[in-house]
Amino acid sequence: MTTKILSGIIIVLLVLNLLLFKQIEEVSSYGERINQSSMSQKTENENYKKVIGFFYEKEGVPIRNHLCTTDTGNKKELVELLDEETTLVFSYSSNDCSDCINGVLEQIKESGYNARILIISDYDNIASMNYLKKKYLFPNAHFLKIAEQYLKDTPAVFLLNKEMKISKFLAINKNDNILGRYLDNILE
Image 1 (cartoon, rainbow, N blue to C red):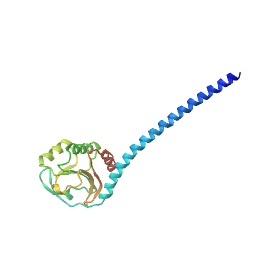
Image 2: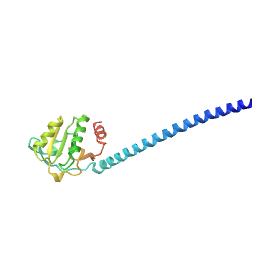
Image 3: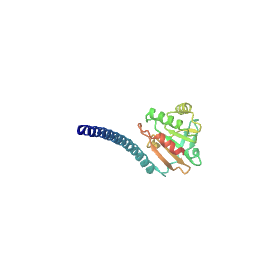
Image 4: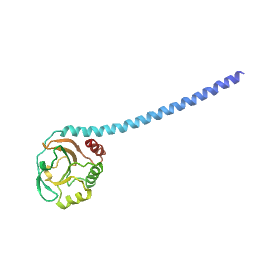
């Protein structure tokens, strides 16, 4: 009788031990998932800090009104091409990575942004502006040529108002994955 009771107690203890071990594994697995999530959140936070830093650094900074060459060869002042509210500007240099430039233009197109866009660069000629215009078919875009010395912190996207003041400036790096979220935020 005592061996039966002792065997029963051992079996109960073994079952409890297995259940406890399973619980420990689940807690450990949960801890690993939290740690991985925390690491990806840390990377995302670093990206946002970088962007927010640029936002504050450039926020409200006025830019000079430039004389630009349009994709039709006409000369216009930049201020003439701005919307009453704000206008999205994408500026880059012909020295910037062409895959990066095409990637940005593709993301802007995919975002569904339909308001006025100014795409400013130091294009070699009008034909290169028209090539991009035909390739991306933005409904309300102006491709503008500007002298290279005025293109700083490129490639970049930002909003520009009628007072020629920058807001929501984002300098774009080749490996940035934040542009999509940036465009979503300015569309809101």
